[in-house]
Length: 86
Image 1 (tube, rainbow, N blue to C red):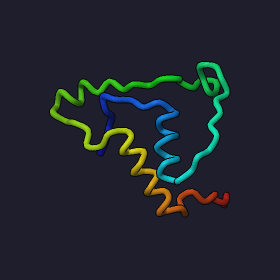
Image 2: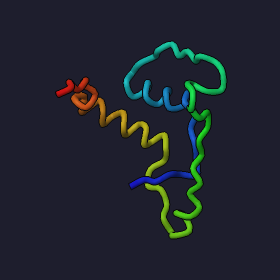
Image 3: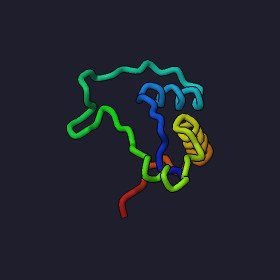
Image 4: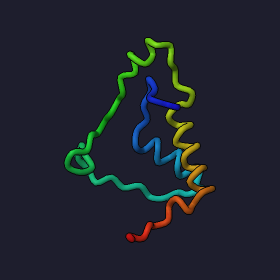
């Protein structure tokens, strides 16, 4: 289980990791401003100090987790299919 790390990555760094795994080179456009949509947070950094005080430490760093998740979704593309309402 991974609860959080003492690091962060930007949205663009996540996009780079995902695109590298998918062998894509899209043109990336940002809408401008400091938020993507009302209520969006431009920066989130989790305070993991209480968890760390117990001796817990992350087993996977953020970029590695993004890479692993992308690979998993590519191998299990049925997870990305649109679900039909009952």
